[in-house]
Structures are given as structure tokens and as C-alpha cells.
Length: 195
Image (cartoon, rainbow, N blue to C red):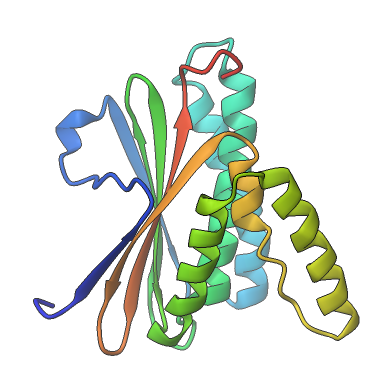
């Protein structure tokens, strides 16, 4: 793996130093052992579980928001992991949550085909570079409706929905010759006045 290329998009924070966190937990889903229909159904339950558990560790005034935002973030990112994952291979989707005093960090790690990485990079840079997330959301909604009429499924709305909740996104991609390991980081602030 020494020859792998690393790509970082956004303000990525590596979770290697676990002593920086007050609390952390990990949930792993083995993609190959669950048929795709069941995995699609279970993503919502897994995300709801994470939201319910982690909302207990924050200030009671922030509990409802954290439960809602964490659920939404996990659903969107698990969905992307399945959509772009290497389902023909045996791989694990890992959800790693880390609590710091001022934010909750959600890491979603999955394996993807290297040929799909250019599309991910384009989508990630588009949402991070926009100066009007609402305008981008409306544009992508129109594009998704037009694509649906043509029998295509291409919304690219997941990242936008996450950012609309004042969550920061970033990515680390380890490019190998046959597989890319994608780590998406969502940072949920616990210090915002509405948090």
C-alpha cells in the first residue's frame, strides 16, 4: 500500500489520535453478507440507532437536533457507501463516531471502484465551492427530475442536504490500482447557538 495515492478534499481531520476524543464508537456493516435490498432497508435503522444513542451524550438542549442531524448524515452517507461500493467484493462499511467537546465527527469508510472516484471528486468540490447552497439544491432538484424522466437516477443531493444542516464535509481517498478506500467525514458542531 506504500504506492497508494492520497487525495484530500475539504478540511479533513484524521482520526488516528483517539486520545483527542472524549468518546468514540464504531458500527460495521458487511456489505456482501446482506442482500442489497436488506442493506438499503437497514441503513435507516442503523442511522436511527446511532442518532438515538449519541444524542444521550450531548447537552439535553441539543439532544433533538443531534439525533435528527446525525440520523440524516448517516442515512445519506451509508446510502452513498452502498451506491458506490464494490458490492461484488467482500467489504465492510464502517461508521466511526467520535465526540470532542465542541463537535461530533462521523467517519464513513467504504471501498469503491477507482473509476468512480472522479465523479466523487467533482461532486465534493462542487458542494464545497458553492457560495449559495440553496440555489445549488434547487438546480440539482431540477436536474434530478429531468434525469428521472429519462429513466436515469442521478440526483447528487445527499451532500447538499448534509451541508444545508450546517454540517461540514470532507474526504480522504486512498487510491490503489484496484480499489479506492473512501473516508467521508461529517463534522456536526455542538457549539452553534442552534445546536
